[in-house]
Amino acid sequence: MFSEQTWLARIVWSALVLVILWALLQWRLELAFVATGTLAVSLAPVFVARWAHVRVPPGFIAALTLFVAGTLFLGEILDFYERYWWWDLAMHGSSAIGFGLIGFVLVFMMFQGDRFAAPHIGLAFFAFCFAITIGTIWEIFEFGMDQIFGFNMQKSGLMDTMGDLIVNMVGAALGAATGLAYLKGQARGGLAAVIDEFVQRNPRFFRRWRK
Image (cartoon, rainbow, N blue to C red; front, side, top):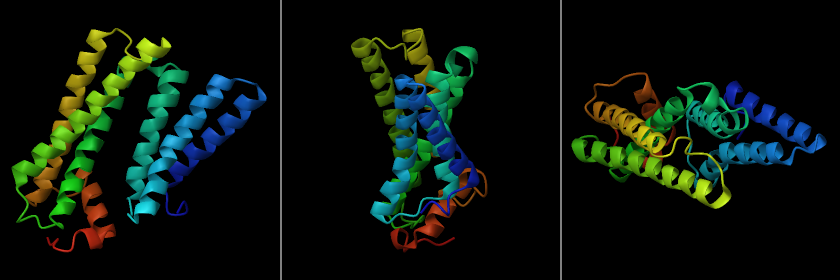
């Protein structure tokens, strides 16, 4: 299960384990809690995929691990959101692209990989809406954390939220456009390679797939 993962993902997981142990020795419970949460969230897809008998591309797991570490650990603990103005944009944009790809794959599975039967615009639109929905739920989560626990996840409030939603929209559009180009046979490599690898690694979900 872990042996097929990339060295990058394994390095991040190992580093988080070391941070947890160091934080517990120093009795820095907040740091230990965030590091543990980051490790758990980044490992969750590996166990869920194993439970569901789905083979997720190692590159996607590595990207997800980096995103979770960048958002929860680097962003909140090391204060990257305040240090680098572009950090929040990068996190939201990359996550929206990823969820756009996930939304596309989920619907593509319903058509068993038949790119000729699948409505191209419909699949792309669903992928776009899926990514937008996840991004909106995250903004609601940030609002809830700020209001209930007194965090400062929204930073500048309305401007931060609207900026995040705009970036989410752009990222979702890129993810959906990648799926659309893949259906039309016009995408090779790059983001489309993630879709292609997922299809190749899970043939039982894409029995009607053909180039």
